[in-house]
Length: 56
Picture 1 (cartoon, rainbow, N blue to C red):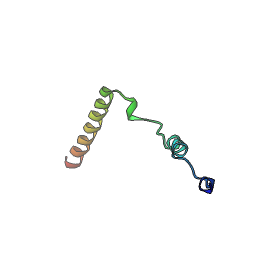
Picture 2 (picture 1 turned 90 degrees about the horizontal axis):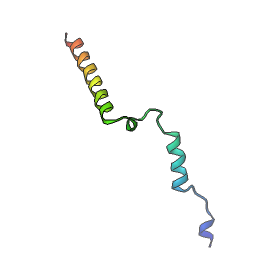
Picture 3 (picture 1 turned 180 degrees about the vertical axis):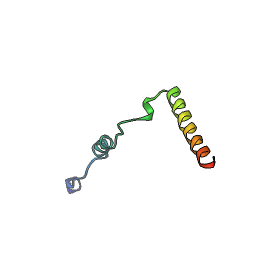
């Protein structure tokens, strides 16, 4: 049948190439729950410090 003669990229191959190209070098998924919690605490402390500097 002529229907199968057309060419198009398969979702698997195109997606795999895109995933490699868009892969971040630093991933939050690699951190443990404790490390993520500590990082969130540091970020919140920094934001509060900025708030107090602006208001102060």
